[in-house]
Image (cartoon, helix red, strand yellow):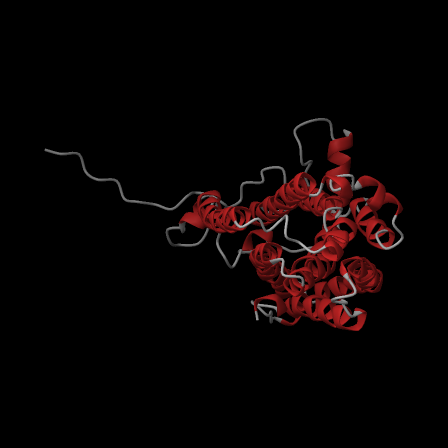
Length: 341
């Protein structure tokens, strides 16, 4: 006689009376170090690591009774993220192969090459700052659902940095006398870069996890991406640089996905505590003007006599991107945004 089959049951840490989805099964309540009212890490309560997490995460003004209520609208796990980005990278690889076979790098106009050297290849420093900001939030987040979402955002930032680095190397090979790849001096000295440099470096000094995630995902990243994906693609199109335009329109899809989970996070926090709405709006408002001015200033580096990126048009596009991100505070979000239209 065969042994009786044991009844299937959901994971013991999962409290809903149903079998969890794959997304929930591998994402739910993994942060054993988030125990409000208790020492986070199993070491001396006075250890610097415990004091850091208590002050900058557990005691953050941004509070929620159950951060595990947050769900990424895209329900990504490592398997599905890798599969999705493999498809995206295959697409970009195909673009590069096609344009390299047609000699596109060598055919770029001199004035556009000047703009790429001034305002494109130095962007790697901004990209690395956004990567570092995302990984800080990942390490401090009070829910594994949130840590996973922002970890994938960090992967997106690294993807963009790597693609721009490849572009810089190809430009260096095809135009050896133009200083491509020698970007640190431009990043540190060019007046048009300094407001954005100040904005990202100031953000990296933020310790409170709640303020960090709010200012990064509701203001800084949407503003940066509106210029260095969307407006950049417009300028590239105007100069016949189809590769850069199509690549950054593809990269903008990552930004729209970030907008979706950021809006979901805001809704989770506000649903739990209505006062979180005012807190998030205040934090966003404290940095919005400076960040907007910074990215508009930096966008001027992409202008040429053939195609000028009108500052007022850039500002309007940045404002639209930020407003779309802040829409999550009212329970709404634009899932496409200006770049996808």
